[in-house]
Image (cartoon, rainbow, N blue to C red; front, side, top):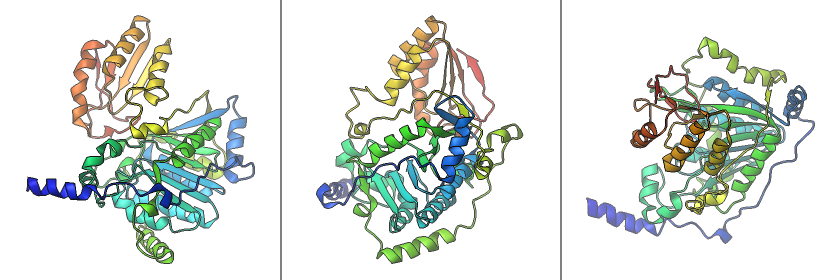
Length: 409
């Protein structure tokens, strides 16, 4: 059996190389000019007029509110929608968002979808058929070109291309009309919006943004979209038929999803954080102004060029920002392993009287238990305060609603 698997992987290696780039139609495109007369543009303008900052934000810690914010932005868009994500599942949450994007394209909105190819399996056919609609483009980041159908088959057929496929894109944002955007830690799927029927849900945090920060997000999207790592889906996934047949198949598939599964409810004291969808509907957003800088990994990190030289990366930015702090550093991460350099930075912070707070998963709530192998170094080397929620809901990206069990280190 082992010999068969090894031989099969050898035979499939030749199928794992990317197509000839010259043979793939991949026209460059860029974010639309900031409109002044769309509904969302007026909403953003009114919200920014209330504050004295160039950018403004509203946190979206409540899953149901975060999802409806995405739907509301897509439903109101009149010029463009750009969606970038690591995971988009073919379940109810993913399908209904794709349906809303189809409807937006039908109104004349330009739709660009940029998704990492590692976890596309459950939504692959939906994405491929959606690309047959006028005004919709779908591109896959660092795609797998051997076997498809599951993550395991993709990796098996790419065993001799791991230096390429081992680099993935985790960016997550949705920009509507280049004036309002959602950015944060949530992927697209039932489990990221507290609707997984098996109970395996992830707690996370997004933010609704307006102002200059949105245009910075669009610039980051364009960098990835127009890069050599983004491939039109039709060049990777064989179309299932003629364009008209694909559109009909997409329509039939999305109509089967009548509604979202029930969520797990919203704690009463968090209701105040679930108002964004209603505010968007009325055109009266209440945002908090702030000085902000949008930071994303440079796209060439996908080729492994930033392993030794981390200049320009998010990791480097966080390190510099942490050392520059004079009062407090508050870190929320599902996979918190700062390493030796991070430990030294934390020691320097503490020596300078900077308060350190870290919120992360406990071993019981993590979906990646191996991460905890690195915690011994953290707890033994860095005095501070760490909180690890031990309830079954894990922090996937940026927030936790569970009562923490805090331990003074």
